[in-house]
Image 1 (cartoon, helix red, strand yellow):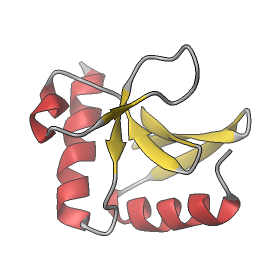
Image 2 (cartoon, one colour; image 1 turned 45 degrees about the vertical axis):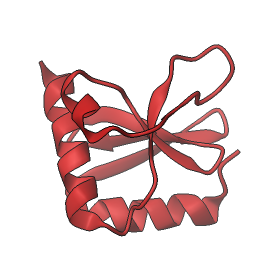
Image 3 (cartoon, helix red, strand yellow; image 1 turned 180 degrees about the vertical axis):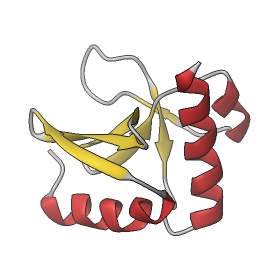
Image 4 (cartoon, one colour; image 1 turned 90 degrees about the vertical axis):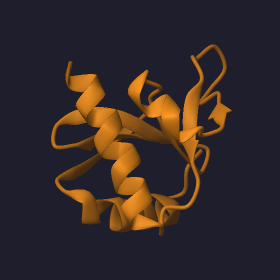
Amino acid sequence: MTSKDFRDYVVYELGKLGDLICRPMMGEYLLYLNNVLFGGLYDGRVLIKRTTENAKFNLPEQIPYKGAKPMYFLEDLEDTEHVKEIIYTTCESLKK
């Protein structure tokens, strides 16, 4: 389960990228940027959806919860420019 403190930290850091929405879901949180669901918070981790386009970033894969498909683990949220590139690439590819 993700703590509210971690959620607040993520919302603060990722909120710099644009219109971020963090919606609660079964004790965890879904993340949307500019109305595109790109990932979520799972057990204190920021995980983003895998796409063909964001594979180039070579992020580690992790399972958000039992039975789910792997997602990419986003570690250093304070590297704003790198995080922005990853998340924008992910959102653009999910719009297709």
